[in-house]
Length: 105
Length: 514
Image: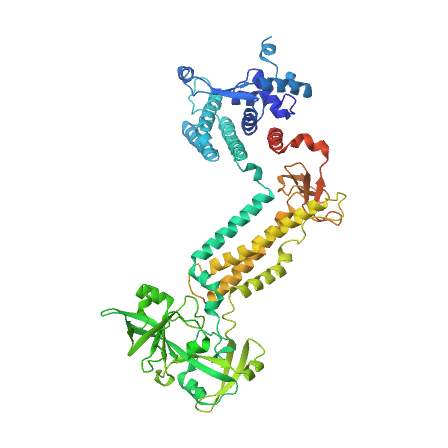
């Protein structure tokens, strides 16, 4: 999918949340306020269209913290380009979900 | 909340996730479950107060976790849809070609089943059961069920002894249970029709393996076996013809076999014992078949005729003659009659329009119109044989023999399948894009459904090819009573850039509707 693809506002928010460092489903839900029934299907579509990709956390890390391993998501190069295009379309996106650096400042 | 309730909620949430996981395609299920179970754990932990166990969360927290788990169903359905789009024939889904393929498959299945059912095979060979023309079955007018034998042998003999103006041939048969010796020690009980020796000649029924000496051996009654008995008791051995069996107190020679489905007169017989009239045992009622003279045929204006006859005591009897053509007309007449009835009933259950309106500004091309009408005709042409074969399959599923019951089943099932099949054909036609003939999809309710009567409402469906939008009003008004097609202009193109991209874009933008 090219960077000029027109994403829905929900999909753009999820991409923005991922770039802002919210890398698993529940954190994206908390950040965006969207329900699980919206966030997870949208991430499936984004992953299918190769805008994001996922990987499992190492089991040893999860075991050390006595919790189940999580599935993390990150933007692909195409996803980053699409997010840039979406920011132009939705100018308030960055204000809704500021990046990690902006949050720590 | 007590830990016990916490455990109950915990179990309930896992059951929800397990239920949702069943919707996920099998190859993705394990990973899907792992992710959702892990997320559920983390969601739950986020609500556990400091220093408490994971079972000690508030009621609101349990509701939040349960709500989180309910979202798994949408995710599972989403994965399921994606999986279907990857299937090799996904592009065919909803297309006219897919519809035709399904109909062809249904036709092939119903035809294949009909080949396996002996009753249907027999029905489809009219030469097996068609009798001579001008035959009627005579019975007592007071008894409306023709399967009940109503004519005494004495009365038949009385008619036979007189000169008849209306009949030039009469035959009698009566079905009795008889013990038959089929071997040295083997005795079986058969339903044997004691019949006049001219019965089969009068009917003109085909008999297989006719024994050449059958007619010459005048002293010994002749026995004709049914196909079922011939195969069941004698293993279908043609050499059995010509041998002698003991039927009750008679010795009888087997002279032939009646093909399956040939006998359509009242009563089911395993064998027919053909005897001279004077040798048939008196007592008990039987059936009489008569062949009409030309005068008799000219008098018979309807399939039934009232007959007045005198019995041996010179009293008048009211009789009823029913044409045997009614019983031997085959399934085709029933089928045509059922179609006629279904066509009459169709307007009562659906609109008979195909959803194309002359008032529309958009004028489809002639080739487009031709395609739509061709598609409609193809569906109808395929539907009719499906109705024919499937109704016969239902009628002869449990029986290999013709009976009035199976005829009724065929009539009723033909009518029902035809009626609802025609309804489906029209509904399907109305929900297909006039441009590409694909089924419109993604229904969306529009308008204010019940807030106020004046706010009209309806359903809109979109052609995945991006050609049209179908609006179906929720209720009819004088200005907007039927469905109408809205042709989409090129400004909609970005949503449907190519068929594959169309699906992809639908999925991406679909997230905004959540």
